[in-house]
Image 1 (tube, helix red, strand yellow):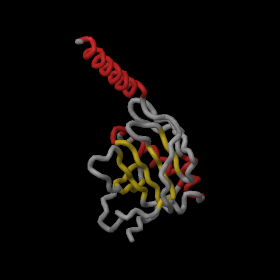
Image 2 (cartoon, one colour; image 1 turned 135 degrees about the vertical axis):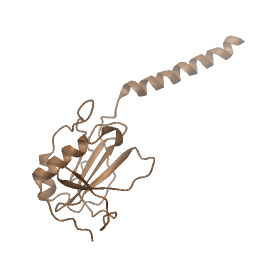
Image 3 (tube, one colour; image 1 turned 90 degrees about the vertical axis):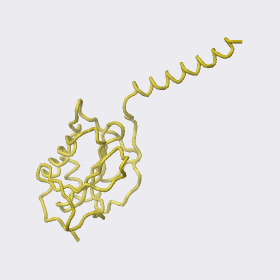
Image 4 (cartoon, rainbow, N blue to C red; image 1 turned 30 degrees about the horizontal axis):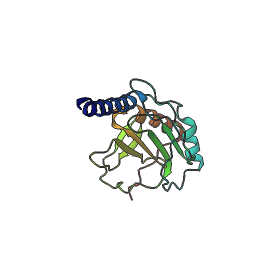
Length: 169
């Protein structure tokens, strides 16, 4: 009788443990990423093409660089990189951020003005928008990746596009 009760319990613990082990050892998702469709009216333009061409294949991060991640279906003006717990995603040609105004707190990274966009308090990632070029860009990255991806994208933006005054209205 005790075996009849203990055996299913032991089996359940082993199966649960195996599932946890598989999640821990499996690493980040590297398969194709399907991005949500969002308006990006300038994504197919020359400015976005120049920024995307200036991006490094891998983004720097600690402890190892972030590898590119395929987008399926392909999205004009977008790139993604493998990261945990979520991928790093760049979208070029997006619309003007609603949060952008005369008193917006901008962060300057490698000569590029970024606007932190609103996110829920429990969000796993942070999104910043480039607001001082001829086209808007948004970079979403997990908090754990640190600032290295933001710096690398800022370098690509600086190399591809000249600065312009921030249009606050």
